[in-house]
Length: 227
Image (cartoon, rainbow, N blue to C red; front, top):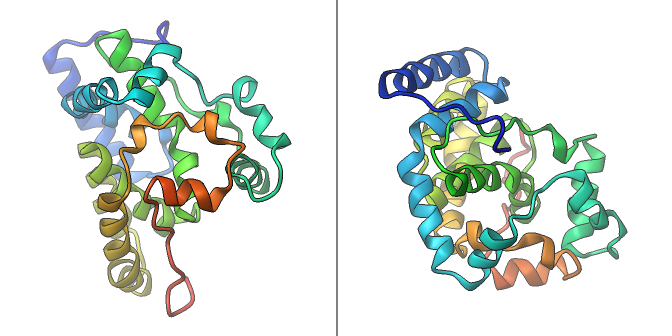
C-alpha cells in the first residue's frame, strides 16, 4: 500500500484530478481513474474521517491494527454460519465472482495514516453493499455513492452521482430520483459512522443484528421493477 504512493506538487495534483475526472466521466468503469480522483480531491475529507476514527474506540482499534480487506485476512467470512454478516459478505462476493484483492492501491496521499484511511474507505465498499442491500448495477453503485458522500463528504462521490445519473435512461433516472435517492439520503444520515467500524470482528454476528446496532436502513424494493 505504501510503496505505491506518489507525492505530487499542487499543479500536478490538479492535473491528475482534472484528467481523472474527465476520463471517469467518459468511462465510469475505470476504477483506477475514479480512485485517483477520490485521492487528489479528497484530502480534507479523509483528514476529517481520520479525526473521527481517532475519537472512536473502535475506530482507534482499526487505525492501530490496520486490517486489510484482502483474501488472506477475510477468508474466514466463508466459514461463518448462515444469516451472519460474514456469510452474507461471502455470498455477495462469491455470487458475483468478485475478489477483495481487485481494488487499486492508494497512490496520492501525503501520510501513512491518510493512505490507510483512503485504503480502508475503498476496501469497505463491498461491506456497505451487503449492509444496505444494494445491487452492483449502475443504479445501486450510484445510490451507494450518495451514502458514501454523506458519510465522508468526498467530492468524488458527488461527482460519481452526477456522472452516474447522466448515464441513466429516462426510466432509470425517474426510478433513481423517486426511490433510491431519497432513501440513500435518509440512510446515510441515519446510520453510525461507518468508517469507525471494525467490520471483520463482526463477521460472526447476525446480519440483521448488526444492521440494527449500526442504524442501517436497508434499501426497500421499489414499487416498480428495477430497470
